[in-house]
Amino acid sequence: MTGGETPTDPAEVRALMAELARRGDSDSLPDQRLIPQLRTAVIERVERTSLRSAAREIGMSPTGLKKFLDGNMPYTKTIHRLRRWYLHHAADARQDISEEDAFAALRVLVHDLPAAAQAETIAGMLRCMEESYGRSHRDVPAWVAEMRERYNLPRADP
Image (cartoon, rainbow, N blue to C red; front, top):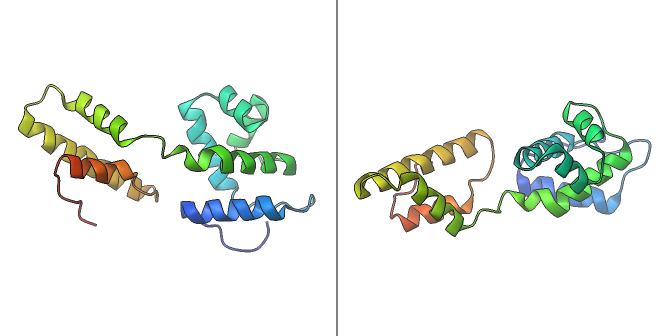
């Protein structure tokens, strides 16, 4: 593994990923700092689609992808494929829920509650979302704040 700390902030991960893609690695010693982030992104993609679909998207075999997810260290060419996939697909995938989609989903979940209980329930769900994202060291999606505004709910305590 080459020097430097492994970033955890999504913007820093993306910046390092782009720098590594631009600079390239030597075939004998690829930079492996971002393997955990790549693995996490692939796991999320597989959970949303399937192993075969994610493997096809990345450009590798389902068997190779399964081995990577099981903890095996990928070959240099596979690391390059994973980085390229991350930069083109995975880094922005978490922002695919629009404000309108979030609003519709929340309305469906609370549709049979009295109006007064709907806002209270949605406030609780949003608070739970914020706490979960915080514990996962992830940015809270923008639609959470938008839902607070739409339902005229107070901001969560930091």
